[in-house]
Length: 467
Image (tube, rainbow, N blue to C red; front, side, top):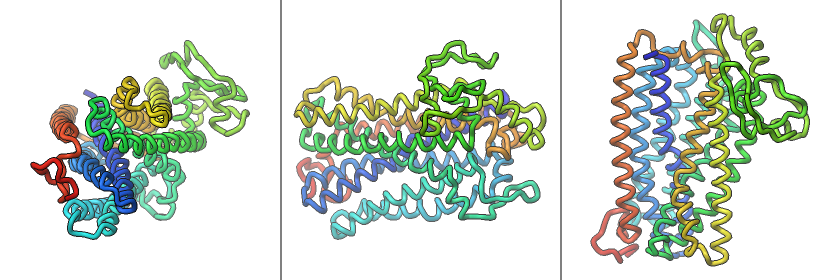
């Protein structure tokens, strides 16, 4: 019943649930835009059918995502008012731009795209879905601009006890944003791709609409492979940036208590004793951590014990003496490895799938298709564990070096009230999740023949597609 713990749990629950929908929207609408582009260029009606079917699922996801985003806004005001007062002048600007520019852009052109199938020219209609895709990417830019400030504060000055923005250019060229945005976007591409691949695999197992789902599956595997490799490369860049800007987070993610040797080994598996600040077991790969951190086989990293002393000397005057700057190590360490593990699976699955497709065996590879069906969850899990590593590994800070989580919560809000609102949010999330699953499963079972030639309305004639 600690208000800080309850507020953190509520923030984690609302953010994780909302982030289920965001990357799926970004990745899925990009694939729909490419499908419709192939239709316009190749004049192949099958691609039009694909754009309509997968676009229909995108619309369901987008609608539920909007509702979860509104809920997330509420919990900010309820539990984090001191945080809002402190960084409102900085944090508010990118969020306002996201709402007034990117979200309005998405919403407007989604409506035109839905109702414009037979009313607009093919190229103009195609431009609408590309503008929707661009709008989702721009939304990510502005949200990540705000988040990057929390990780690496730039472009501000402290006046009257508050952070005030004095350099907007510094805010949008934040080094954290430049490494974080590619990682999020490629992760979103993976999310959309594995969603399409998993549903396609489900229908290929049932031997339904084979031509439609073979083509969808092939496109999804290509997107999934490109996205997964992009995630790995951008994640590597982000980790190297963390070594410089948030060394405590990286030390926790690697389970490093004492300064490493030079060159530093990489910890594949470790049993961590957080109370005694040591690891009771380690399985290390020599030289690997130095190479991953500095792109060369030399260089050491500081341990959490050394960094704790440095942080005390630097930040105790801001937050008070005796502050523990070491984050929850086990959570940070294992969430980092789970993220990497699912990322590796997301690279291997498309490679194997494309090889089987090239050999003409994909339809017969029952076990592989079942893996792809289960693989729908892989990007969602990787995204979630990556977010946990990012946010938990930054503790005790809300805004790194400026404001702790304990100082950011709303004052004088009883723990019982936070608990009650958390239960209400979880109840709403459960209902929304149930509705989402019901609608998606219903549309998936109906298959692509359900959609008429006019937008995404249902038709009683299953053969009247594109008529």
